[in-house]
Image 1 (tube, rainbow, N blue to C red):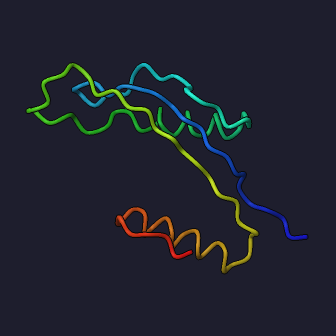
Image 2 (cartoon, helix red, strand yellow):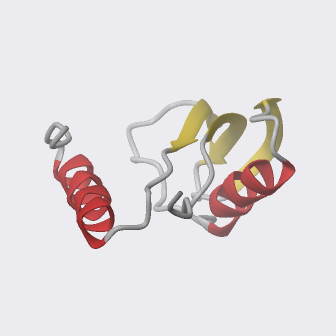
Image 3 (tube, helix red, strand yellow):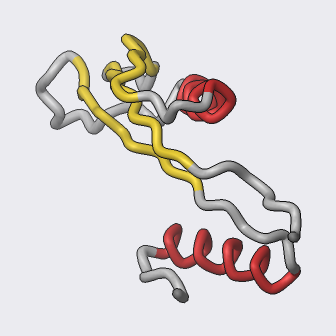
Length: 99
């Protein structure tokens, strides 16, 4: 059996973005059941602060978000790793995954 890389799960984090781009008010809305995945998602959101400032036209004090983050394991073969990277790049461009 081949070793799996990355764990699979979904975590949902709720937070707010202030007008100046600062991320604040983070709450774990739904955990993945895996502390390591939850912590990685939490740290990713926290490390993104500050984000770009909100548009001048935005009239609120903050933008509230609830973001679901999920991971998909790979079997560790070069083909699977390339496919995951290609899917990520497609996602960043707004395209559909390859599989």
